[in-house]
Image (cartoon, one colour):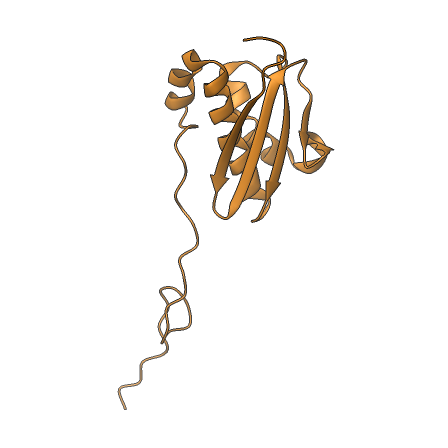
Length: 131
């Protein structure tokens, strides 16, 4: 891998979509033009977003620029994690085993179920009256 190579990938979670651009560097991470620590405002969210870098021990060797939109904070953190995992796999295919074992490459398909007609929610029913 040369110093000027850029690895681009897309990650998704719930209704969030994240696009990550990875290059060799010293660990500078920006999300929507803000530092990651500012964008992921709790320790839990930043840990969730950085799971691929922690699993592969590449936190201080790459720079990442991430654009994310849609959904809420947890979905966006999950999308960032998925995008980083996919980009790391493109960057170094030998990391696939580590990322796969940690469950970071697989897209999490869980999303909100749609509301059905004739009832107040996805599963909830209107009150039944026998008489």
